[in-house]
Length: 210
Image 1 (cartoon, rainbow, N blue to C red):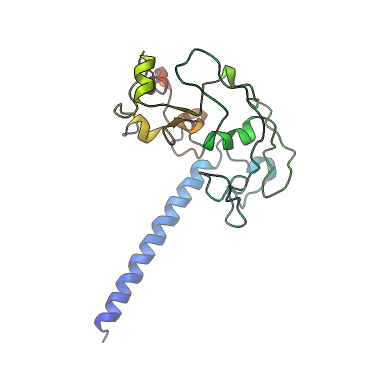
Image 2 (cartoon, helix red, strand yellow):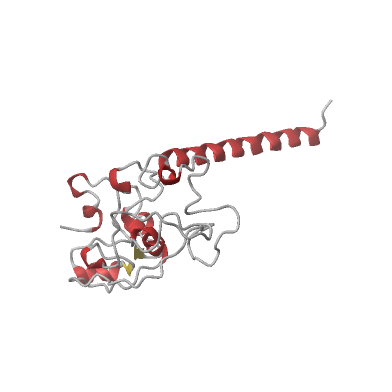
């Protein structure tokens, strides 16, 4: 007959198996969403065994890059021309997550520059280093900016289609970044890797009060 300790052990084992199952299920879903998307780079190298390695690695990761778990890709060192249009914020050089995005999208770093190797595959339609023709990024978007601008929603109170506020769902560290609009892992399965479908400008109108 099993004692109380054995019953507890069996229950703990079952709980652990459930946790492992759902962890694997979640990981599989993320992989499935990324596979075939614009950020599935296996098509360049035929790396069917590892779809994540161009950006992330479980071993020998670059831990000096902030906000980038297990980072594996070369980081751009380019100097950018920031957005200079009419704006109540002051965009500077891409920072944080946006700098990681530009580590492929600026056209100065090859897609396959990962794991310490220097790659040779560059994006044919890179955004370049002149950001004056693109949406401004890496600036603080807060209630004060919304008031000063007059046509922006308050990020601390205005809700998005994702269920939370602009600050909760779209901003990173209170800043507008590339990932405010784009979901690099394609979890939402929207065209253009968008976090919110832009039908009838829905994404734009999430922040802009027109």
